[in-house]
Length: 84
Image (cartoon, rainbow, N blue to C red):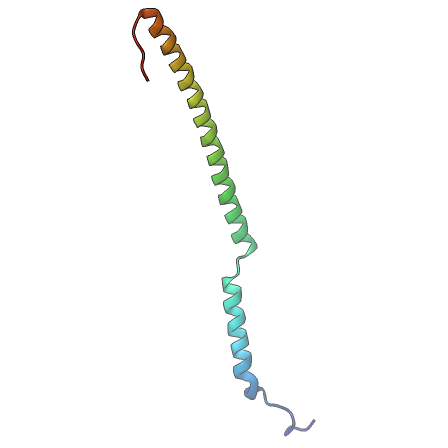
């Protein structure tokens, strides 16, 4: 091909620049493996905290139920009426 038939780089440069800019924008918006790892760690930590909280609540409910049963038992023995 002669020089007259070869498209000049400057003719297509705006298109190349647009493609490069678009590629950079897309790459900036995409999460990296490190971003995903941090997010996964955060979710795992929150899930563990929630699980621990519910276990603690279950234990407290059991304690309250035992105490209420004891109060009802004692109130009957001492002659004090217990009302909920």
